[in-house]
Length: 277
Image (tube, rainbow, N blue to C red; front, side, top):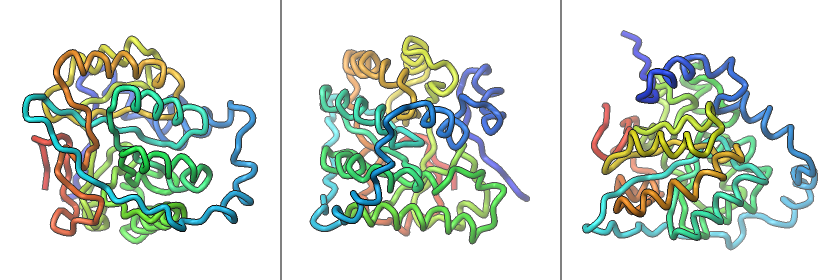
């Protein structure tokens, strides 16, 4: 029996919105990416050809070191989808550094090559890079080979920029079925807390969603393509710190290294406490 698993916001309002994300201009992914990015001026992607010729992967090998989880604290993984964005992602990275927090960036392959310097910065500063497909299609509409191509092209694009093994995959829209699980060689990561930043575009609403849904071991979904997400990140990290949370990458939370873990191939994680086989 063909089963599609959708990981939704706990709030009913977000549930109905996410079911229609492909037609909503404020949704995550290709639609959101097109409308958000195209509205920005002075886009440095225009010069990416010359930049890529001068800057190959070269010596940009940064080994991933698992962050020791503080046993005295609760733990939460912060994740960002759909980037990198040339204006928002640097702001997000600056704020994470301010709080000594680490996150996982599930990047789109067709954007990763546009901003190699941001991919390098993520890894250099102790963050994790995950695979969010090449162009954000619905995997449930694709064949197994097409899914593999979406994932493989993204891995290859990242490899052009930095010597880094991507092990975690997040399917667009969080959609998972038997074909997706068979096509993915490593762990599949969705989320247990949807901030609905794609919908509200409101820093206070983002904070309130985190406050309402978060628990020990949660994986939080955000997007580093919306200025309002960066605007609200300070308050989110400040509040999580006050509540005794250590903010780590997904890999650290689940105790995965960046090297592909075939023993976890196709296994789905929503948090450190919830998995579906």
